[in-house]
Length: 75
Image (spheres, rainbow, N blue to C red):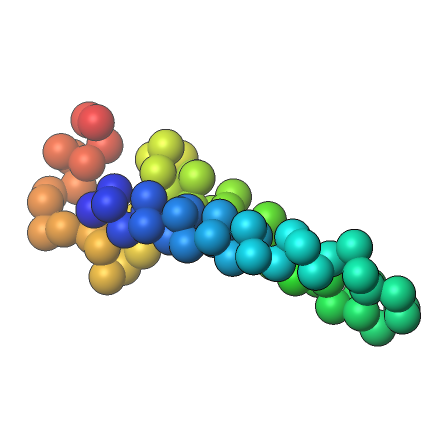
């Protein structure tokens, strides 16, 4: 179901929208490490969801259908 992928992309964009205002105020090294790791994690989330949306990889197990394998490969 591609709608779940779109919803996850929208949710990650929503989180980025609200956190973007706080990122420039990180002054201590631990705050910069937190925001750097948070942005890296967001990058992985967006990349994985884009790969699922563009069908570059198989969808998660909960979103897979019971279609035979040959019909999935022909898409």
